Image 1 (cartoon, helix red, strand yellow):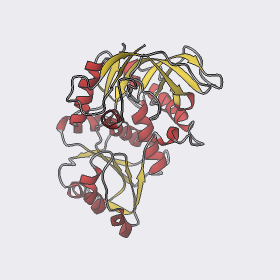
Image 2 (cartoon, rainbow, N blue to C red):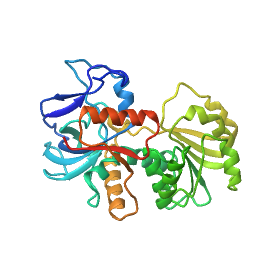
Image 3 (cartoon, rainbow, N blue to C red):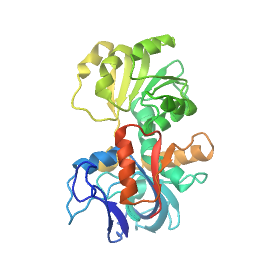
Length: 336
């Protein structure tokens, strides 16, 4: 089967940072689906793994953690799926990724793809939808239909996770949603997706909130550059507020949250599959719910740009734009 892989971890400054290769088609285990991949999207985790995870010519690494495709085979213990089903999923960090014609994925973390969306539109959603859903409802503890009188501040509202988080918060809760964006086109995107207000995170945050009549925020979703903004979070978070974070950084002093009795929460959507948690199947349930919301037009795809067919050259272009920090929405590739 065709696949895109790397044989040496590192930056994109080499012509062979990603290469087109041929691999054997894998065979499903008892709990697996074998999926014929139709479309994929690119996420920051792709670049992180490509730059750090060791690989060799003899052991190339196939990455990619978003896909939509058709079930080609099912494992002996699989329920609720059959050959021919159209599915979407993010996959697991410790298994080969979706940048291949065929991929194995645990059926428990797979959802039935939304019928109303094209393959490209659906491929944009799984990883960010899972992340946004878990962050909002599990980590920040907001109840569906709840949040009246509270404000959610979304740092990086126009990015992949922000684009779906803004929609979930606006359409499934009573929260006031304040997004941040540093570029005009990103701000317009966040407004289109439902943010009540959009401010500029390159300028003092608290002053902009106060100009909106908001003296503090109960909930903060920090989706990018947490360390750079952290001092401002301490200023604007309300007593007993909650801060949820998805990005990586060296260190921050969480004791600064103590005087306000504010709490710090990690969101990492791969934790369930990495540790085979008892509630691992909740991700499949979650994806089915997201598909229903999409088909009911309660959510919309966050597809930003279509980067063509799935090959090394196009994936390198997509990785480069993602790493530039200038992408809006999700970058998608389709077909081999």
